[in-house]
Length: 121
Image (cartoon, rainbow, N blue to C red; front, side):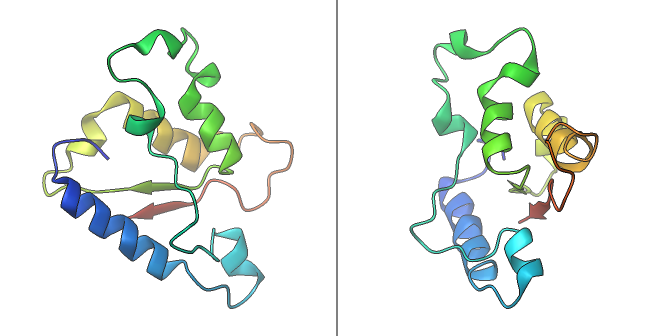
């Protein structure tokens, strides 16, 4: 996600994500992040970091709030894709995608089960 799209479109995508992942039909659904409700918290990096004071950003991105939040979420991320794909030109978005697709499979986590799953809206 980047803040070039409208907040309305962003919220519509999140609401659709919650509908899509709202029911667990089996254990595979649970591993991919199912069972969400309208009350399930979703960490949004732009709201999780003070955008006017980036003192929390460390020299090592593996120690950043982004990485810590992704560890809690077991590497499950949602990409809100804009019409021009600008999200893929933003370094933090690409870093989060890298962690999702490769970092969790390379042993960043203690077990290498179904971690690092990516949803695109």
